[in-house]
Amino acid sequence: MLETIERIFDRVLLPCLAAVGDWLSNFDLAEMFRQGVYFAFHLSLTHYLLLAAALFTIGLLGVMTRRNLIALIISIELMLNAANINFVAFSQYLGQSSGSVMAVLVLALAAAEVAVGLAIGLYLYRRNGTIDVEQFHTLRG
Image 1: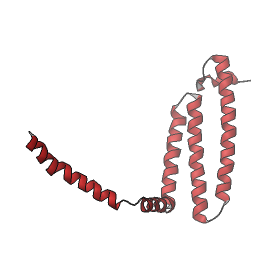
Image 2 (image 1 turned 180 degrees about the vertical axis):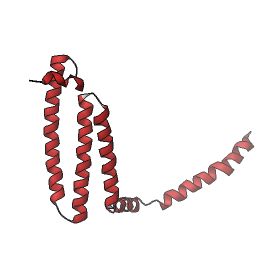
Image 3 (image 1 turned 45 degrees about the horizontal axis):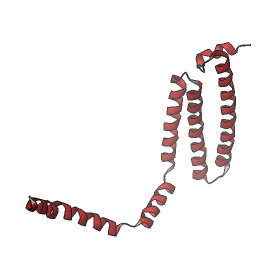
Image 4 (image 1 turned 180 degrees about the horizontal axis):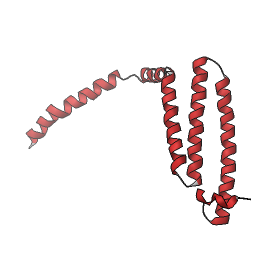
């Protein structure tokens, strides 16, 4: 029994520990950080546009399929953030700062949209006991 344990130790564990030790001796955290920064700042415009398209699609599907007001607000926020990614990506690509200014304006618009949406939701909840979007017909004047 002791011989079997020694054989397992010699044939399996020692080579594994040696491989881990070699990997740790060659590990350079600073180089890994440099490569990560290089990757993050050298993405092409296509990468940003694909990310924005995916976020916009998820938001659009949320708006089309959800009936809860909170879920609708979150989906609209996703769509606005996709537009922000496009603004900032084109701003960086063209070397202008106007896209960043537009992104800040869209963030202000999103904050106002959330405030109005939550106020309407609070009114619906107090009046009907639900925040179902189907109850919007009760707001007619």
